[in-house]
Image: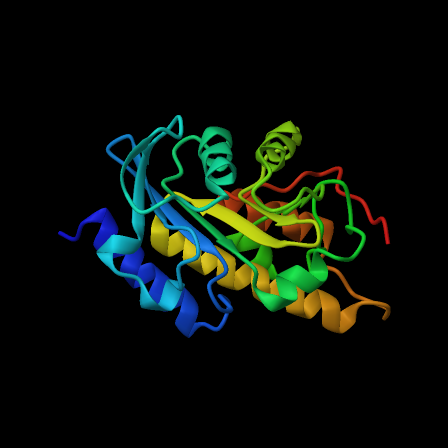
Length: 218
């Protein structure tokens, strides 16, 4: 059985290999034994070592290791919002950043349901209002959104997802990046969305959030 630190190192390598963690951007965390293990500030996810991992309490109190990422409050907010989730992935992946600079598709999802995989693996992903990276108010803005979500775009910034396992969180991050790419490729063109009844059925079957009231904004 691997340790949370080993799992984070492997996760960082996987995210970097997928090409969705440019430079030293992005951070990943795991909740285990009531402690949060998180990649440290300024670390390259593809070249992590044990010295690059910070350990804090769920309240954000430093326990040991590296200096936590400035986005610690954002991760803690996601654990608070999605009780039972044990992993958070935040990335500045290119297509997610680009999509986060557009006006959102609806109040409940920044991007539309164009593929079943987005609905199955992520679900509705709202746009969180812009705050300077590291601003604790970014976490407050995330928690202020009233509806359920496992993924979100941070305005003019990037993406964040949570899941019940680290593998599932990485899969969701990869899928959200792909959904953003498809959204950008089809932006400004006549688009055929998934039928509403199929979206609802997929979300119910896979346990992802999708509001019936999600309506086209643009």
